Image (tube, rainbow, N blue to C red; front, side, top):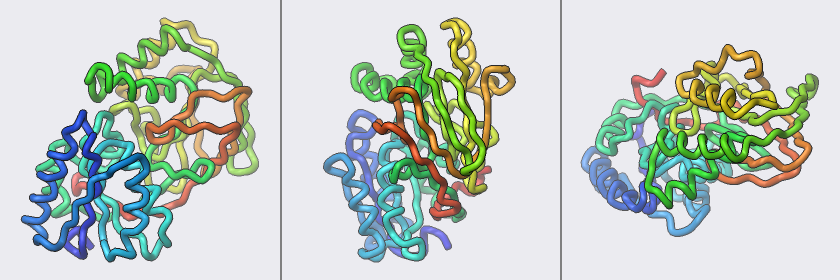
Length: 310
């Protein structure tokens, strides 16, 4: 099945890319209607935080076969959470037109950052069942992280509003600032798959469904989105600022994987605690809790991937 089968709900964040989301939504909607038919596509602009969750959760009731998110990783997060409220056999397909800053899930799906090109990709996209993560009842499509990396991700939100920077440059500038001023350490304990314990002191710890976050940093380069497993990466503390900065920059192209104090692991469930609350982000959104129950929903979401995606 492809997007040509059934009606499409296009859910767009008009504030994406500093207000360019509304114009991008109009372009995408017009192109989709040109290809699929005037009555085959309905466009709805989000009006408030978490509005996309409501819209996506009603998609099957309103007889949509596909829900397409237009915006950045934030709207991806909301639409996925809305779709996961639905029974698996009633869950519409998920598609993405990336109009954001990081666009990491778009990389996972192989979608172009050009709106017209992304729409064309839908015409021969392949449907694939992929995993979805869950932390304390909140779903995530790509990434969950703690400590330094989360602090960077959350700082980029304010920095983007203040400077207009986008993508990798935004993440690099925020990262260097956090490294210089907030290289904190957090003690953690984790129970993996209910039987194996790990512990230590870390500057950062991430739990990945996909390979990248932060605008293309390949943090867990061996991650697969359909294997029912999370890939974890964590960095031992303490590190000096020069050492941490060097390894942070090397992570852009996955050149951090051989360092002795960078560790990788895999699990389908993780029970995680820290000695104090670290910064935490879930698909770029702040998440506040005292402990973290993390599980994967294997092959829970039908996504439309670019035909060329790996």
